[in-house]
Image (tube, rainbow, N blue to C red; front, side, top):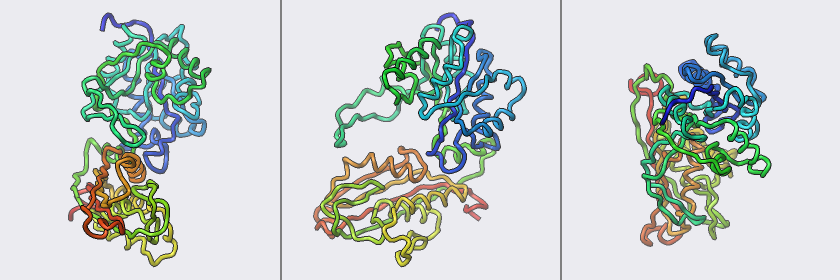
Length: 406
């Protein structure tokens, strides 16, 4: 990487988001892991590195109190590195811009931009970020992609399969020379380009040469509720047991112009006859999760005889079941559904369903599978009289006490 730079390096921590995918309650950067707020952990990791001389945090205007609580938990020498926090904007890009404006390029010409929700950043990774600045004005940590990536069009048709060896999943901290990054942000703002969610992408758009250095697979970003469940109590983790259960649902076709499947409105020449919105995918998944909990089925909790559930959106049912897993200290590992029908075609809507189900259940889309099959013209689905779905859910529950083995 060449000779290490001797100039001061600042860190900009982006902590103004609301973190809605992590579930209800406090924004994720202020939630705790083993009693310590995520932001406090992130700041400690950055303060522990000798090359970082100052740190500015972009926070939401409403978060002065939780931010002060996070800072209060730092040691005095750690707090000494913190500059006054700045108010972030409505987007990540706006928050980064506000943080950059609070830094002085004449006294601190380099900056590491880091996500508040990445508290597991290691000293070695920060070493590599600092070293990259010796040769590059913009450098990002990246890890090799292990899955095959497909590029698709609006109809879900695969248009390109890029080679995996040329792909990297980008993390933070991202390392930049401060002046050109701030200039790139100003240019984007003047051009009305406000949708960048990654500073490397913004720098690339502005014409900066962006390079990749080795990231760290352990440098995880806390995004969903399940991420907190996995890392809570990591030093003395309670034993967990795995459970798997299945679910099934069917509805006859009726009048209408669409079908709700996996939380997505799929156009069709018919609708379904149902008490709620008739989403067979969400109903089957709800039964699978409730089955893994041994807590009855969807009818137990949402009886069709109760008028309050008439025309109800089925995302409420799956969200309830997912929340029951969390209330018992458990984790949803995987959700799988197979749709049985001759029509409509499921392929064009598969990714939207996966994304919506993941959002409802509070898990990653990688933990959701949607498949479809016909019944070769056999049975009621083969005759086009209705639609069915079967599902499976894999969860983990504490091995003793709250919902586990006795």
